[in-house]
Image 1 (cartoon, rainbow, N blue to C red):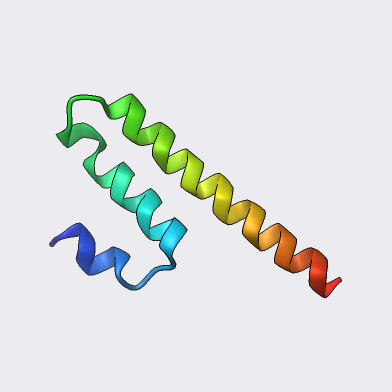
Image 2: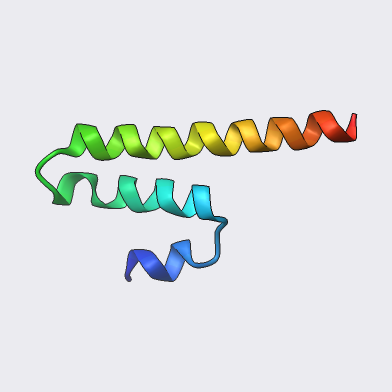
Length: 56
């Protein structure tokens, strides 16, 4: 199974987070890829919080 087969069904931020987690141990700098995944997850959390605040 390829990463794209999973991530194409997700939103942009979550898909990118999964991509970076997926490839973390396949590249030279796993720490950097995990930091990038965290950045996308944090961005998705912020987006959802802001959307929730608008509805409240």
